[in-house]
Length: 340
Image (cartoon, rainbow, N blue to C red; front, side, top):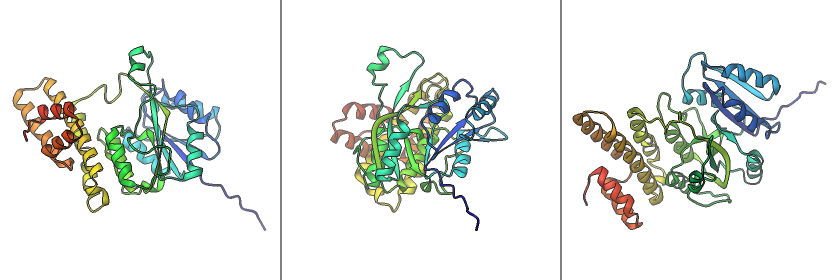
């Protein structure tokens, strides 16, 4: 009788898309591998980099035999497609998306594993720190050493899906790398939108809508690298338009769910839509465009806000007033141009 070796599935898959990240990816992967036990698989996908990223990855794979699962796209498809390809290949019970220019802070994987073993939540949320090449006093005074990503209950298992969604939207930190989720939440019908900016904002709330439990650990587990090539540092008209419509799929997905009429979700979502709209209109106002074009684009942005937000402009202004958010109300009123 022959014995069959059963290989246990990983408890976690760390997914790292790489594109022209030769200067960063070694620090990123080192921060993962030095913490990872045998139950952690590390998937790395080279999205057809044109620099030396592929050579760096091959070197790291030889340095750490069996620790990295290397993948590659034949043509560059973008971060969303890279993440989607890795989701399809991942074997872990949980998924943690990590950008190639960021890194895990010491103790992150141990902290996550402790929570998973004790509570087995559908989603685990963590905080982050901003990682600058030259950090200054003004950055520390802004609280960049510890940025919070959630507005809600902390350090306890919570079975309130709408509380999860409201807390994510209200905090406004809708990036994938501060949310660790069960792979089962990412069915074949849920992926990052390919060819769009602000893909995290579009996909993460949809994932959260499916969760039945969560645990928020208010500790920085990720060092987010701030540099001149980031999405927010290089805004464009296409990017701001994508940002304003990013939550539209969520509004459709909430129909018929308890979150559709949840007051906290409705306000938090409308507030997030308003933040995107304000940023977009400011960009258009400062852009070198003809005035008729600015007016046409602004009208479209208003239309996109109305389609995404569960509260219309007047309802949101009243909600701001009830909370005493007078400056926020005044800013929104000035840029949206409504009166009550």
